[in-house]
Length: 404
Image 1 (cartoon, rainbow, N blue to C red):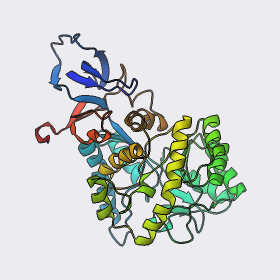
Image 2: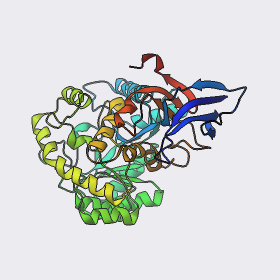
Image 3: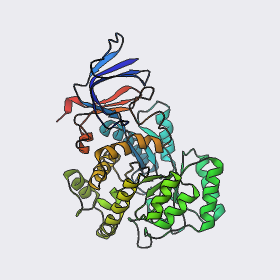
Image 4: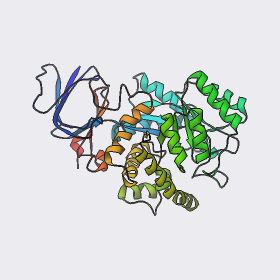
């Protein structure tokens, strides 16, 4: 099957300049060729889709997600698994989010849906699974139901082996506290002892599994990077040495600005205000988020200016809104629209280990693409003006008849 997308304004996420009146030929799910303005070929057996000047770019990625936090008392497991699948599919079809990396689920819901999507029996985004996130007794976010409390070096070794056995793609370790939790779960506190840290990272190295490290203060960030973490999540407090270590080791940083920035007093547009109202976060947690927000922003800007490798992850729900909100916060906090867009496309695929196949519009790559009605490099919120979503070169969502 061949499809020819014509009259596209191409943003390939390789070069920061839009390429007007381009054409892209898709064959067997991959980008077979890209034609500049005035060089559109005649392809007799191809379906031609005229984009009429709309913006063609790689699909979006959100590399820090969770399912809804529901206990089994709130909803039976079967309902929760179904709901998660629905949310994942909505992210793809309603928002053009073609790839997601999980940061913790209970009951290996993410593994189940990854397998379902990969099999082709169900339509959904590309999903990278973590299973449970691992923390200590009295560790981070125990009320979520997604955490496993683990203690001692062998406790971590055993828990990591269990995750591997159940089919995860990476290991999520919560090394420190957070912003949204009980009074004893503080982001300035680290939880693991040195021998626990070493054992956890040692077994991951032996089994060749990447570590996704929840690290929120300089002590935790430095320990994780030095032990070989693939990515640092949150990094609410970063000092100069943290930045130096990011650069020295080539470690990824996923800042999740939404956690500290989305409160009633900080919401700056209708999308943020609507999300904050629906979230209805407790006043005490809003205070904790607001107290951390400026420091979080300062570390984000410091990392951005230094050239730290950064990818976009939201850590909020619903999944169809989360990455779009996080994109807006990146720009609000000082990133250019280009930097934010690359973080949500090329870098999202790269942090998941599939940058050679996805994340940009280049010859030979898998055609996971979106079409939007405005230039996101002029206004990042134009990614919300979604017209088409393609997965494996096939149109799976067409909203052109519902354009504003």
